Image 1 (cartoon, rainbow over the protein chains, first blue to last red):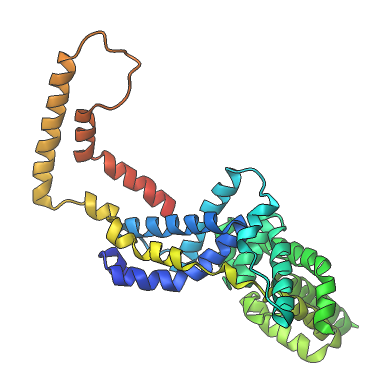
Image 2: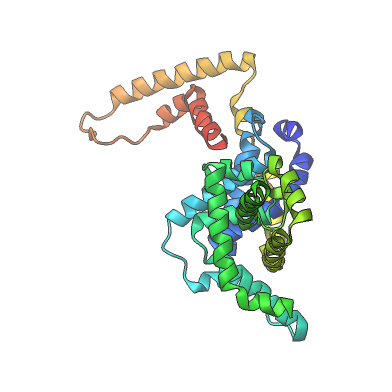
Length: 173
Length: 156
């Protein structure tokens, strides 16, 4: 980060390669719109680059970037109407035959069910389960206590368990 | 009896933990991981809870690859340094340059006062748009640093 603060473009490139996948996935889960999500990620990295000389390492950079992206996503969600099912189209892949299609369809179904969770439950699950942040980091990003985070996670997982029970059966069989 | 109660309590806590974090020891609160391991090694009910959570974890892990950043996004991100300056570096002028900046600010302000006084008195009082001279003064004064403070707020 020090090199980025000194205007080192190569260091910035490495930083984007390291952190963009995780924050982009979180933004896409939050916004359910691939294009808007990528705009938010670009805005977050732009802010990081512009303000790098004044950056103070109070948290891990990944956590810090997640916080910026998450806040941008929340602002984006507040600013728009509830997402139409069409908004998911950008995330749906083309059909493929046989077993790959079955896996893809199941993966898409899981993704769609995650997308339908209430915003804060979705955010908690995305940060902890999918992006592997610690409970403390995720609680900080969502500005809740660890207990509240656990409650959000538990509600999210209970809902998914219920809605995906048929898929779990397939998996077991 | 006491042991039975303890185990039931631990099972209840384990249930809460796997409900929240799934079957991932590393995601659970650090201080409780040892107890979870001990309970799992002793209790079949605990193992059943763990197994059920692992099943959901496996389903969740089948996410579509479309969540990864597109090549276009990566290009846009990596173009940022070439296209955008760094705010603090633009504003933090060398000490010697600050003298000139102060002089420029004073000149711009003076110019603003002169041109302002020469303008038609009929100019609308509601017209609050910044004149070029005001913008000039702003650019060389401390106002932009205040804007930086706002960005810092975003970062924090």
